[in-house]
Image 1: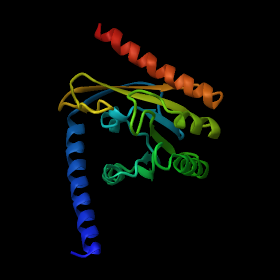
Image 2: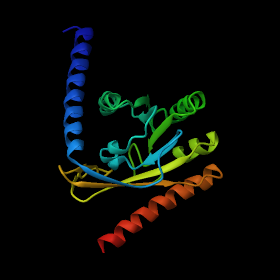
Image 3: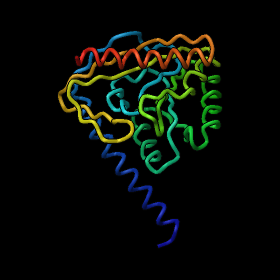
Image 4: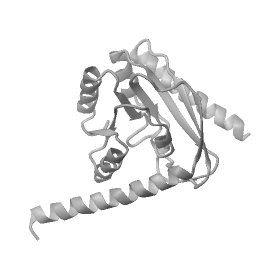
Length: 210
């Protein structure tokens, strides 16, 4: 088999798998009951979330143009195809591979498109779980754009034994989504405020379980 043919077959397999994943996700999302709390996502800015909560947060995509950084791995290629079906553009790279280039590209896109929403998993791509990396806070502060933290809580879900504790809501479960506006006077302060907002969410969840 020629290399060109092998690449084409590989691409077709990826496209078929992404179509199947999108079909399953959309079918699942239609069964879920969702409630929302907090500020609306309006006017463009940076939306921070945890890597493991990205599936239920597809219920809370902001209206308008959206972009997200996605890793350069094979899984990232598949995710790029999937997210394109949800009208989310991809900038390929991660904090470990091409991270500075990704931040520069996101900065350029947000400068050129003031209403653009940039969706960033603050503990991605490799964790540790719930550890906030500085990229989202830096981007929002330098561009003087709003910074939000979005969290999803499911009353019934499967949780994978992965580093990000990936959440898959069970069909017909209830998803509660909270959006918090994060203060951002400077990159360091914004990073600390984002970390504190995440800690406050985690503490609130622990108290509810108790």
